[in-house]
Image 1: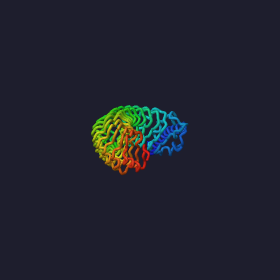
Image 2 (image 1 turned 90 degrees about the vertical axis):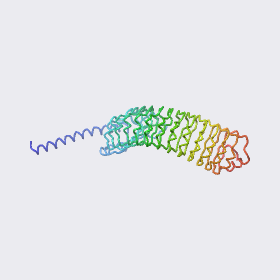
Image 3 (image 1 turned 60 degrees about the vertical axis):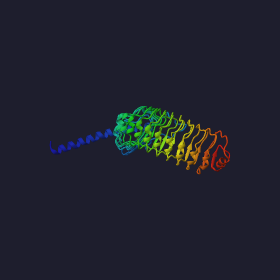
Length: 398
């Protein structure tokens, strides 16, 4: 066979190969369009032009805003076609309203993805190939039926945001500690009872939300999250915090509302950067003296606790702006409150107070106070005159 014949043969082979690929391409493209037509997806959501489809970097298919005609039991689409994994230029996928229980098994082929958001779905699991999305930085799996995560998720070492809220998640994989770049972890409204010890390896973590879970205790390893700035433990079943909580020296917001908390560790006073501390609707009976070391605190919320007194050290909170003590069991306040020079708002509703301390006269910036529901025996004329100077007073006739 001559060289020219060889060249011609090779060209014919290339053309045939190209035609085969084109045929395959047309096949999967047609399947994507059939899926888009079946669920009445707009051309702006899934282009019906092949070149535009192949060039897509963002796939966004969202549900209409809920109203009386749109129930949460109604989904926008029944499934996600496997053929979407051929759209390898995709950088972002944002889908909501999926009736399917699974994602495409080959989703790991979309290696350019940086954001994957799947909300309001019937998903019960993630495919193992999820770990191949090496460039993924944000993963949102909201309002699904997922009960566990595959171990391969720990391979997402570029991930910095992981939102798994309103799921049926019962545990986190022990390997989660390998996600070294994670900065935000949202586990709100899951079914977690505990966190794995490896949680302490997430040294980049800045925000941890574990609200509305059945969490009964925190591992001592929580103290290793030294970059944490916000910790939400609302509506959990915690009775105590570990002593290691004091190691979270960068923490500035701590919320422990609606828990079974009975006491705070003395180490709480080591949280020198804390600006907001909310511990409401729990069985807390006293505050440790070390709370006075929280000198950067601006908001302290202790409503619906079983506090019978406040420690004298409360007066050391010189940056405190708001103090909420609704429905505590206090009978009096310590004189040291006079040192709270920046206090502008205080709520003492239903605190069983019989009097207000004379030190209240020394609060120059107080602008708002609620003293409703207290069985005051008597208030001095000076105190009455002082209440008349405050802009907003509830529970006392000016």
